[in-house]
Length: 191
Image (cartoon, rainbow, N blue to C red; front, top):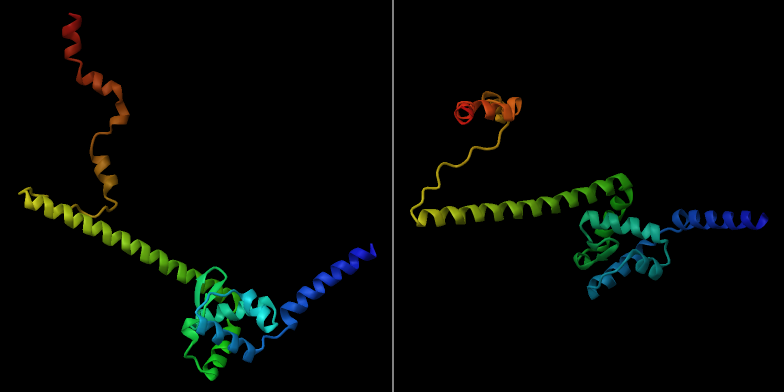
């Protein structure tokens, strides 16, 4: 039982200490980002934390904030490239790091959601432009062959319900209505 307590206290103590106790060395962080900017290689928060001796959580938060500020390029989930960082002076870096460290997790989530929505918007815009180009292609093909494509269809609005109610409903009588329409033919065959 004492073994479980000592193991549990060690695990929680080291986890909490590494997350908040280890501060991020700004100079080391700056130098490491500059080094990666010169090589142009992708890196992860683990790479940076191992190189500068800071906690992975602190480095990850700082990298997310720096990417949100536009100083880093987020290539994939958890992978960064610091090519935009080559020309950043240290004073500007320190200001950006201070802003980035104040950004909370809700803001980070919002920023990632905004970027996801922007990507989705770009995809939908490309699909719409493709559909418009296809429509224009077919309209021009019809006109080349002397076929009148007719008027453009009206946008699909909600007046579909009044149109359906003004027409006789086929479901009310079903086959009975069809039989009554054929009623004059039925007496001829039976008689």
